[in-house]
Length: 429
Ligand code: S3P
Image 1 (cartoon, helix red, strand yellow):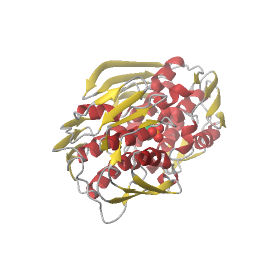
Image 2 (image 1 turned 60 degrees about the vertical axis):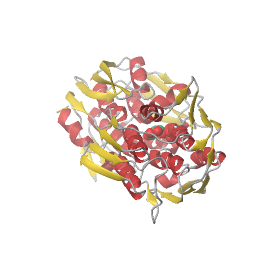
Image 3 (image 1 turned 90 degrees about the horizontal axis):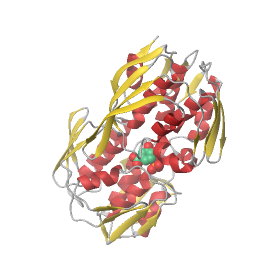
Image 4 (image 1 turned 135 degrees about the horizontal axis):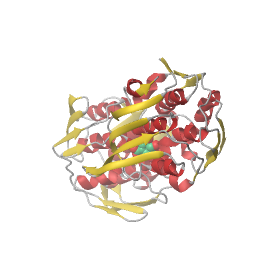
C-alpha cells in the first residue's frame, strides 16, 4: 500500500496513542503464566501484539478479547504452557521471540519459534547465550530463527549483558523465575525496565541495584490487572512533527513517560524544542503524563552511547529533526540500530536523502548537517517492512515542501494501526 503524505501548515489538536507495545507484550506473556485471570486495559492492539496473543493461544492459553484494547488472559500457571503441534509464529516481533524463549526454557516440552523474513534475519544468539549458561537446551539456525527450545531444569546465573538490550535482560530474568537459585543481570547501560516493574506488580521479589537486577526462582505469580499507558514511541512521531511544522500546538494525552524510555525528551530539550510534560501521575506501576509539543527552532546536539537505549526506537526521528536543526548533530553508540527490523542507520539515510537531508553513517552512529528550513521533500520513502520507517516517512512528508510518497505504508500497523488517519485528523493544510 502506498500513501502520499502532503505538507502540513500546522498540527493542531488533542490525541491519544495506542497502548505501549513493550508493556502489552509483557502483560500477555506474564498473564499467560500467572495464576488466575489477568485483565489488561489499554492494550496496544497492533500487528506485533496480535502475534503475542496468537503465540500464547498456541501454547494453550485462553485470551478473551472483550474489546480492541481490553483483554482477559486466563493464566495457566508458571509451568502450564503446552507445546503446540507446529511452530509458534512470532511474526515481526523481536520482543515476543526473545522474551518467549526465556519463558519456554523453563517449561516442559519442545517448542519451535519462527518469524517473518525480517525477524529471521535478526540475531538470536544474544538470548541463546545466557539461556544456555542457565543450562537451557536451545538451538538457533546459524544464530537466527527458527529457534528451538527444549524446556528443562535451569540454574541461576550472573550475566553481564554484552549488548544493552532490554529484550535480552528480560529473557534472562524470565528464565530466572524457573531457575534454582538467583539470577542476576548486570547492565552497564540501563535499558527499559517494564519487565522488572511488572514482576514487582505480580508479587515477585526483584532486587534492583544501580547496575544489576536479581530475581530468584518462584512457584507462582499473579498479575490481576494491568493498565497499559500510551506508547511513548508512538507519541514520539507526533511530538517531533509538531516541533518541526510551523504554527503547531499538539497535545498527546496519557503517554507512558517511564524515564528508561524518554531519552527523546532530553534530546529535544537540548535542541531547544518547546515540549512540556504535565499532569504527571502513575498508572499501575508505570509513570504517565500528558505532553504538549509546539513548533520550535531547533539547534543541533550530540548523543552519546549512554543515552542511546533510552531513545533507541526514536533515533530515526532524531535524524529528521537534526536535518532541520541549526548545526551538525552527531550520534554515537547506536550500532544496535543495524540489527532492528531493518539496518536503521542505512535505511534512515536512504529515506531522508530525497528530502535533501545530508546524513552520513559510521559503524555505530550518524552525523547530520542540519538546515533550518523545510526540506524540499518529494520522492519516495521505502518502508521496507519496517514500521518505524513508514512512520518516519509520514512525518517527513508533513514537514517537507512537496510531500512524501510512502511505499509499503501498511508496515506502520506493526506498532500503530490508524497512524495515518490520526495524523490526518490533526493536520491543517
Ligand atoms: C524492546 C526493547 C528494545 C526496543 C524494542 C522493544 C522491549 O529492543 O528496540 O522495540 O520491549 O524490550 P532491544 O532490547 O533489542 O534493544
